Length: 226
Image (tube, rainbow, N blue to C red):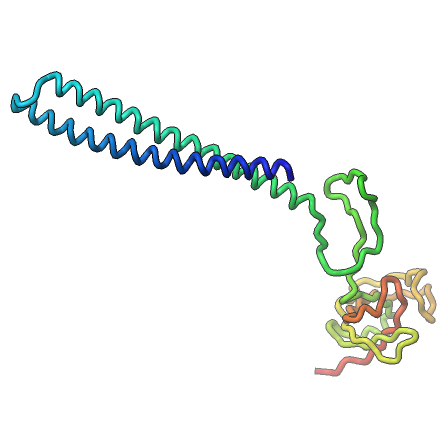
């Protein structure tokens, strides 16, 4: 993005400034340390009456100016570093905004329906599409209480579909603890006025043979007694 390019250019410029500022700090420190040694020597000589007051005042003034220069160099370096941190924070925030604007699917699958067209405004936390995962699909069957003894959680089952001789494999992943009236849309030969229990069957569908809404026939076998 344009803003990202501007931040990158500013960071590059600041990096060059930081290199120069670091060199200036090192130079100012060398100068300060050198004058500090000379000042110590002049003080010693002055105490021994081997140096004049003028010499002492001159070196003290030079040392004071060197201390000021060293302090300013450090301040300048700190200011540049602070600007760099601020720009990096802006870059991180921009990257987060870009990531948040990207749509990521929670699973592999096919888009069944799009709720928005390109250019339309989307409110936060609003679904934009219906995604159907097809590698594993779920089928819901309904059994009367008399047949609950023929099934068990995690039991393997066979799944048949029209037009295909081979069965698909599935397993019982959930059994409802409550009875209900058979839903009207369920394809069953039994009476729909009976109380039944919902059972969820998870079906392996690696070739994506099964599609969303396709009717299937679940073949149950009584589980072996342990």
